[in-house]
Length: 123
Image (cartoon, rainbow, N blue to C red; front, side):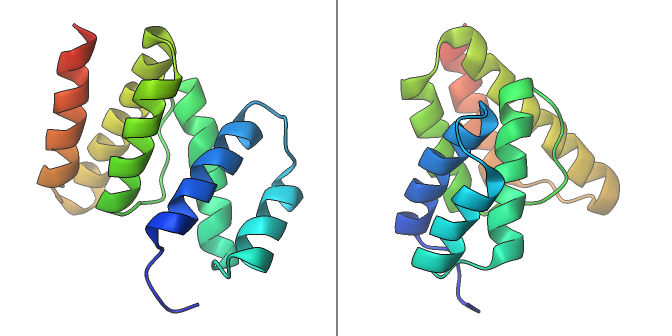
């Protein structure tokens, strides 16, 4: 699929990624749905699943995501997780933004502003 990832696909990525990150779902099962049923690129789907593991652990992830991904995921994480779990997600995104800055000097203003707005809600 050469098109951008849609909101519908991202909603499913969130559901599957959340289950994958806590070992309730195998990678192959998530990919079967995302690639087989939703026609998502396998590499993109795999990267999203790996990013979800990083989110849950508060660790840096290397693969970039669209601004729409952040809008959907952060909103859902904020509503679904405890404050301490959400803090891990925010930490992971901040580490990713630092990583991206070190590699390309890209500032990702829109994502940074979104993260800052959610960080403010944690105080």
